[in-house]
Length: 369
Ligand SMILES: *Cc1c(COP(=O)(O)O)cnc(C)c1O
Picture 1 (cartoon, helix red, strand yellow):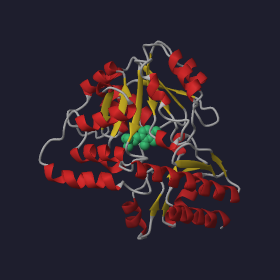
Picture 2 (cartoon, helix red, strand yellow; picture 1 turned 90 degrees about the vertical axis):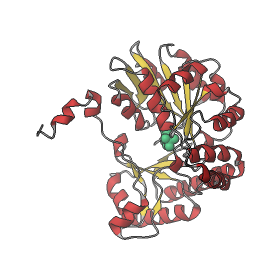
Picture 3 (cartoon, protein in one colour; picture 1 turned 120 degrees about the vertical axis):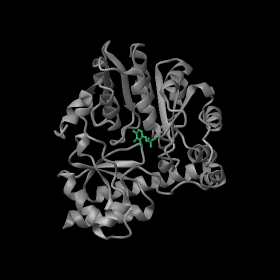
């Protein structure tokens, strides 16, 4: 075969139309390109404080065992999560990042005859996992940049096998209240699995998180996904989890690869759960940084979307790409969101105070030039 493009026509139709996920630019790459040092990255919603001491100690203590396969059932981490959330261990599915859980649920439930409903401006991984298995993505228009639950429900038919909701949503930071959210889940047909992606739930504060866990008792078609990549500062290790009915977890477990979580990730995540000091510190640095950065936007007369996460979308009222590139030249990596149909916005991850200052200073210089 010498027609090199022929291979594209052989891929699943949905895959032919996919645009690959663009991650935040790595610091090393920008260093190579521009010969800069002191680069700061506020592009991937990582924890600016790094991993906690307890996680690091657990990794150190585990290194000697690396010749062995990890525990394929993740017993200790599941036990710790089960205690934390008062669920049974058989309600937990561990993933190589929560992205893997999103992929497992798509593989286990979708074929080309089914549809998947999610919102405009929602997390970019939803179309990827949907189209990768040949299913059809049905995108509901957003309302004030967030999920319009009524518009989503209107698009649910008997062909809909999955619904994705990110709460808070990435990249917009919007948050749904629990009353509307539960009404939505209740209104879904029992032939439709609801994935509630709570990657940022730790940042939400008290109105938050654990309401949704209670719903697991009522809705066997509900899958909650969470991660150690954001508030717990372990993005590099790739560990996330799903919470669901035991039946739904059993289904995911059938398609999961046996050793999908590595040994260092399992040990670090378990230890991170006990490090409440690091988590509290992370949450408070984020809250202070969010105030500081949004005050800075106000001074620059820029609008932003109020965010419940560890990042914020700023509206530049002009194309974001040139500003993104100007920030890169000053050694500040943020995230353009044109692929999310938000060409005039940039997404900024809240950093340490010093990073936030550098970012605002760079942005001020660029906008006043
Ligand atoms: C970051 C993120 C995730 C998960 O990331 P993992 O590192 O794979 O756990 C999931 N959903 C949303 C909305 C995110 O922003």
